[in-house]
Length: 50
Image 1 (cartoon, rainbow, N blue to C red):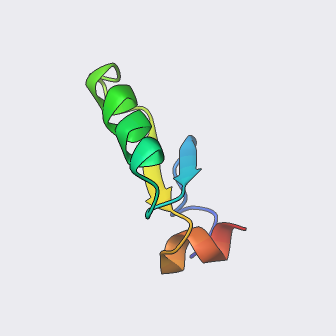
Image 2 (cartoon, rainbow, N blue to C red):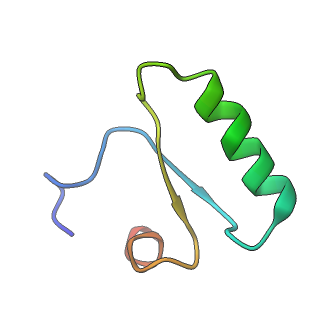
């Protein structure tokens, strides 16, 4: 993934954690403009950002 493809605001979260998934849903509901992007730590994108 090149730097042009990475959104400005990316929140990495543990994709197997129910609390983390709940927090992501909480944030999505409060981010109507979709300013925050999400990717799990287990995803290929998440691994490349670490």
